[in-house]
Amino acid sequence: MRRILIGVALLLAACQQGPAPQAPKANALSPVERLRAEGDAFLAKADYVNAIEKYRQAADLDPAAIGPRFALGTAYSFLDKRPEAIVQFRWVMGTAAADSTEYEEARRWLTRVGALATTPTVVADAAQRSAASAGDPTTSGRLAGRTEWPGVTPKIKLITGMLSLTGDEPVIQDVKRTRQFRLGDAYEFKDVPAGRYRLAAVIDGTTIWDEKITVEAGKDTGLTLSQATSPVPASMFSPPATASTESSPSPDAPRSQ
Image (cartoon, rainbow, N blue to C red):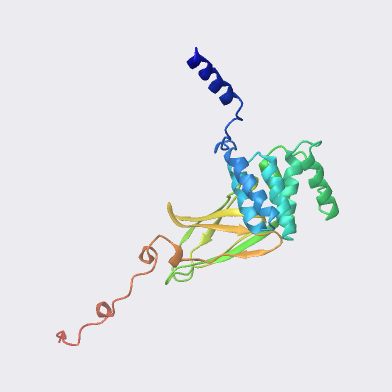
């Protein structure tokens, strides 16, 4: 009987203790939410550059998410990058519900800076959003440069290929521009919506260059494509060296009489 009473007392004492604290689950947040939270932490410390990078990563993981895009526009506005902020806030207005906080705040900011689009804000898809921004100096820029290869110019040796400029982030993923180019000559893309791109150059089915480039709104972006940055050896296109011994006889060679 004594043993039974002791056992009951111990059980009652154990029941009066509070629950042991539990560590937060590592997977409580989704990858997008985690990146957004990390961006918010940087934003709170006024570290806008790192905040932008986190928000970009979150937007890349979930292109349809409103939160990362709104946060990205906010971070850009703190850095006085108005054209970039305009792109993000216009995207928010074209995607978010009209009664959402993000929509209202984006509209208020765009109105304050005089960048509220006069076209309908409900846009069917990313392709239409990109087309609407083309030619608008507040949201588009220009990419220009030249290709360089040892011993190759259009006058010396005419080699042609195709340049492709493709959007490398969700908001401009449907933007794709192509144009023919001549090796050793200049190239240009006008009215390019601001954002990150991949620029690829292909000649006869071989990729000569595949570079990442960011086009800024209202600015000219330059990129020189040289053999030094190409995975292709110079000998693929460079003219072979002329051997002088083949064009003139050796001094020791017997002369015909």
